[in-house]
Length: 186
Image (cartoon, rainbow, N blue to C red; front, top):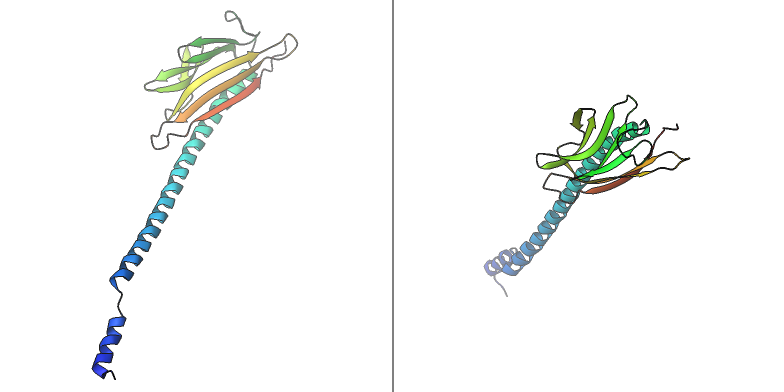
């Protein structure tokens, strides 16, 4: 027979955790917390990459809208040896350049140029020029291909590659290609 005092001692002793139970529960808790932290980090990285890619895409969309409008309305060019009746493609140290006359009779040149450490898209109209790509986007390459025939409209194909310059998302590069047909029929 167990005495009342001894029975009370055994009941109290069984109410606690053993060292092994504490070690196992701490290990399980650590694994769960580390897994949750890793998943949270992966979600944050994916969001940053998605935001940077969206930023590059939106800025390139603006760039393409600007040049598409002007290329469509281009007039017959008298600028040097023309690739087509309207457009002249040449090269500089950063890539291709596209020259033509816009609907206002201004000489237009699209090219890449350095602005500090960033390579940006530059448009020059007569003697004035401006960069139309933002400083936070680096244009890695720009190429123009002009197709024209005697009975067809000229078509300018623009190939470009760009990436965001926010060091946290190194994999936000994007390659785009679009073709723009001229409305010049004469």
